[in-house]
Length: 349
Image: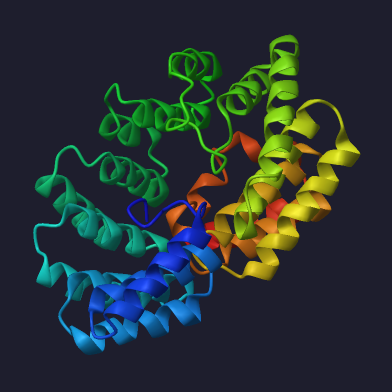
């Protein structure tokens, strides 16, 4: 999925370039691929993207790029088995493509097929040991499959900023908040290191101080994060706005503005529901459930968490193994709805 993530900014120009390419070369598979990705990233129209990718495959049936593109659309539509098949065909045509092997592993993760995911992710790393996405995904696979934070940490060693921020997440599950603060503080505050999808450095640090019980240090960082999120609302568009509203909600709640925080969560969730994106939707839904828990609204948090855990694609982000160890749920652990979820998934293990 990381190789699939591209910016939707400047989508109008990208669309114009794609249409021009198709006019000049209507029988060129690459022109149809360009149109497809314009629909996919620029408009979020997965049906139109699928039609363009299928047109490319008619012209070039064994093209790895067209096969993988079809797989990405199939994932978005929730057809994960078909996506695995498409990506496997693509990798057959391009067997040394570490990014494709990574994408296969991630697709298996989405459906909770962690043993299969580990096979593909290790292949991705064998092809390219510098594939940091595959390294993090393998670490996450271990975490979600067994709830084994220590083994997940062992896989995610390295000084690269993306590895350091990932280890920060893992330390949270061990409740080593002070160590996580030190680790995250040392990551350079560069645009490539912190995005609206995960939240700004200020927001992540603020929440770490909140978890550590240091309200004095958290407060100015939440204010900074609130300003950043408000500015981001004017930049992002489409389903990406769900993440921005979530970030704003987190900053508002951290600043003690509960009503504003709840309103921002509702706006985020409305976008998630309308988009019905089987890849990114479960993650945003889960984050919103966590925010409801932080706001001590179990009647809102537990049902949304239940829906997220039952959603296709959730396996890439979360598993029931996390319910016992994630401090995000501490505010609602005594709630009957949350206890019911624990009992349900314990019975399934």
